Amino acid sequence: MKKLKVLFMPIDGTGHVNASIALAQVLIKAGHECTFGICDQWRGKLEPYRIREILWSMNDRQNADESAAKYWGLYLKEKGILGPVSPLEKAVIILKEQKSVNKTQQEIDDKVEQTISQVRPDIIILDQMSSLIVKKSGIPWVLVCSCNPLTSIRDDRTPPAFSGLPTTGPISEWQTFNRVYNENIQETWQVFNDIEVANGFPKLKENSLISESKYLNIYGYPLELDYLDIRPLPDNWYRFDNFMRSEQHLPFEIPEQLLDKPGKLIYFSLGSMGGTDVDNMKRLVGILAKSKHRFIVSKGPLDDEYDLPDNMWGEISVPQINVLPLVDLVITHGGNNTITETFSCGKPMIVMPLFGDQYDNAQRVHEKGFGIRLDAYKCSEEELLTTIESLVNDNILSEKLKKISQRIRTENSLTKLPEIFENLVQTYAIAQVLIKAGHECTFGICDQWRGKLEPYGIREILWSMNDRENADQSTAKYWGLYLKEKGILGPEGPLEKAVIMLKDQKNIVEMHRKINQKVEQTICQLKPDIILVDQMASLVSVMKSGVVGT
Figure (cartoon, rainbow, N blue to C red):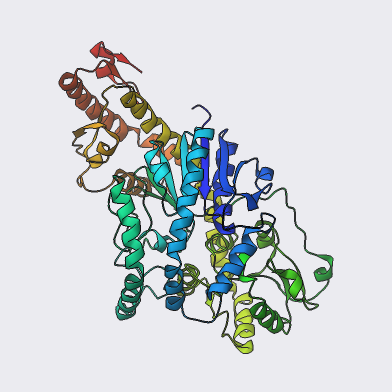
């Protein structure tokens, strides 16, 4: 596979960028070239990860030297999104701000067009609600959901995104939240939807501003937390356990002032933006000062406005990835990265959500029994300190989390990303280049792909396979269940899995024989000038046809 040029365009919030960094790292390790198109407040911060920066000057950012975290934190505080109001009230505030978001999106699209011309990428990774320029480019693009999956995968069987409501109901609370949310998003949704339709794209899903990719959509959420026990993985979506980056250039050791102190070691962070609510940080730090334990604190962008007591050490930010393995408990705002990274390290959590999908993460951790949800603004001294003692002394939970951590690290799902992207580019790129040059492209393929290739101008010749009883089931689901049934998805080592696959070769040989029959019929029907084959073994029908094959 040739070296791919991969263009990332994430929302410039710290959590979104960090998730994209994790994706870029595995691609760079596989030999690909990664570029970020991003606000100039990120100048120089991506270079340590060997990521090329194309910086955008944004009209709403008057101070390029101010961190994006501080900009967004102060913005959220000014709008009342950081504060003691309910998840629904905060959702309404955010929705009322969407008009300015649309204006920003249009400004970003202007930058995107220039960046695509400059980079000429093979694939685009988008962590934004949408981008008309990306969709018009004809370049394969992947939608990244770096938030709780409820934000992008809407399903009547799951609670509303941003609500923090239990998956067990009551349904009446879901309905109330949805009614108010839908009333407040309708006008903005109509604007976004009209723009999409006017540009020749499908209608947006009702009351959702997110435009899914026809190529591929991905999210990072641990299997044990995900909603797969309630709804299936939708077609054209792929789940990873996390989007967890490596920060080898930021080594961390427990500070000397904490080494000789008694008690468990606890990490406390309300994220890159939550720390801008200094009054609340002071309140919580004051409570934690009365604990017998030690604390590493990520203070946030206004770190110089408050001090820490003797049982704490902290800085404006800390290398979280390297801190998590050292601690016994994490107190977090519930950002998606922190949740998935903490889970990967096998640590219990106190989740104190502040806004958005953090409420959903907090509720999911709580109802699955991997931690406790508390109110960041209303929890009492007794409630917080008692919860800390309960979790640091829960040996059963500790062992359970260690086993989950071992599974996540053994499977290391993110290492599959380069192959997924390579296959995506190879599959669509070859056909699209040929079509663009005026040639006609046809796929001979299983009928589970019905209708999915037509948007690319590719003709479909569909094969009914005897081993596929349900043509409406996606191939991803079919193969996923197949691998699970055979024991190939699981904690076994690479050698054990290779042996299982080899023992299953008889089935694959039979499948290959049937494919050969379908191919022979298709060649007679189509009479192609050239045949492109991506199969494990050569096809006798192609070799006998006399047609040029590759």
